[in-house]
Length: 481
Image (tube, rainbow, N blue to C red; front, side, top):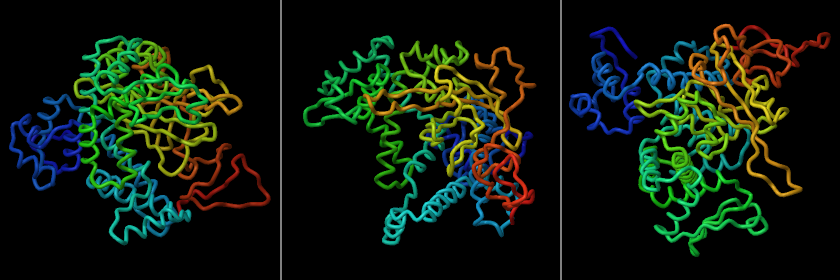
């Protein structure tokens, strides 16, 4: 975003995203920059340019890396557009990559709208009757949400998985409690009992059955299954306090998201309450300082904050506070069938919204080595390289003879940040060979991949009964138009 002195830029959407990520109103940021609120309003509506001097003042006042802030969103938006326009639906439309990148940079709102429209189209194409019913409701004036889970994920990504008001509330609570990580559960239980008249009870599995946590509103009891481990119990208490004490802040964030259907609104509230709970267990400043001092050793961080491996990995993706940023990590959780049940990114990794992950990524190999942490340098088809670690986790235990739930957690960052990680110590990151992976099979155009599950939708499938290749699918080199 930086430019030569005197050059004017119309970057309203990007400027607005930066302000929202800082949690500031137009009046507040205008005061910080020494300009009028009306001028800020005109900048965000692209009716006035923003000069290089204003951008530099913005960076200095709020300790921002404007290049990183802009690039992460634009790369994500571009990846979404590229995925959409790779669909055979657009076979007759040759949209140059530069046009997609221009659209992602200048019109992020249009990009988001296209993504939601395509998601609705994809589900409708699969013949889901629920979607058809929702579309019929829309004709009567109701708002159509194709997929509440994806909608909320988009909202989290739009905020870079960072919510300053919840961070502050969590830090205030920990300051009031003034206890160690080991004493947190008892302190939270006392808070619920004394301030909200809610009694915490650890219940046997035969009483809770398939439920791990339940709040009995009438009896004012928070019931937690004995199957939940120590870190999970503290998390559930912190979540309940978040719902009880931070309802206004959570509702404010939800309302800023714009019109949502009831399902999306409820899911967004639950997601934000979970965010608050993690921030209570791992308060921002001490957690960030520990992460930096320990070179992001996840296991030691888990011990220090009495948290689980997955909880720490998730928390690492939220370190986006001005003046105290962490490594911009991405994180995902998959099962042994490759289904992605959680994904977060404070960086630029292009997660696919319409498929699984690449089987060559060693996050899937953790199921074969359950007691080992795996590390890997991966490289996408465009040449972008990332460093990742992965480990299998069990959460929570299940009574016999039910299968024990297992998930793989992957955590990674761009290769330029990997030197800050203890896991990359001793590695020559510049010379390290990267494993060539794709976003997923339907979008990956790498040839001769023995793990390919389906041909790329951008290529023509070639069938030859006289030839058997390494890959199950052969396809032309030319893109379909």
